[in-house]
Image (cartoon, rainbow, N blue to C red; front, side, top):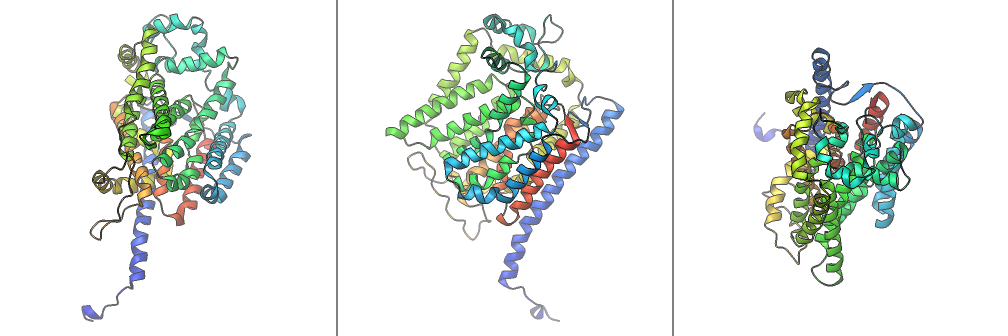
Length: 491
């Protein structure tokens, strides 16, 4: 048989084969993520059994293997089924205001139901009352001014009256939030847990607002069901980091709104208010968690997507106002952070091996963001270099993005231009996570510490082809349900 007599595939067959190739890569990437987590669990169990140095009962998570069901189980199954069956269609058709409310309520229902799998007391009311947590220090703020002035003196371990670990590990904005709740009559673990669930669930809405402000509403609608069923909701309902994530997310959303408003007239006034609000929230973010200084990376990416630096002066003004207030009240961020590092290495941080957690942390990211996010992130990383180059070459029009021109025949296929902000934002969050990981200041407990970053990652599922999205949604929901029913998490 000669070469010319070999059968040739039709153009349609070639197109079908080309379409299957990225799908196979998606599945391979998801499988690789699952393997990473399995390897971290097996290797971690061996290390912990041998040396006990990981300080994690079920590495790479702080959890115990305790298969169980609870009062939240039927609700969690119902919410998952409704979102999988109807979420994509509803997200595509609802008006924008109704969509944002629907997403917030659905995310709250998902988070509440997962938390209540462990029951009211274990799942919600007692989470923030343990000896490590913020509520243990509320009584010491009867004189808030004096407590702030002396705050740094009690960070290092071994000092008289040293703070519980979570208070010592964060700037005072964190504990002051719960002091404020106590002052208005919402004291105790039940109200604290409720506050974290309600605020933390709003992260999904903040992501949608950010994408729409960056002219990516179609991507926001596609991502909405994945944001609702984020596996990270397991920890949003059990830790204050869900609240921290909400503050940071709304700071980014207001920045995107400020960048999207026009440079004159009514739009300018709204943009100015949004920029100032963003700065105030960014300032608060810095006084909730030291590590959230890394939110500068997605913030800069928003300005890159919008092709404007117009909001920057007012954002900096807001940050300065918050920083000046805390400084005048007696807390100096730059003096407290070195003391935190000392306290960190006095405790488990000085024992836990960097060589394991440098990749064990990434296994936690796989679990918290979900396999759909992992597959979508592969697509984001593949598309980012060329998108950045083409985005850089676009002219700016009155401070707003202009549509991305179609790819030429010599360029690889790229996502539609409305997905460009998704690609760039996902890369920014990955860079922030990598920086946190390499710092060595996040060895373990990243399932909660990194919530401000991992809650954004399911957005990457918007890059996946439409035909398989329902299957990916099932994978997301199943991962969260299995985690919450097989393990009893510490937070």
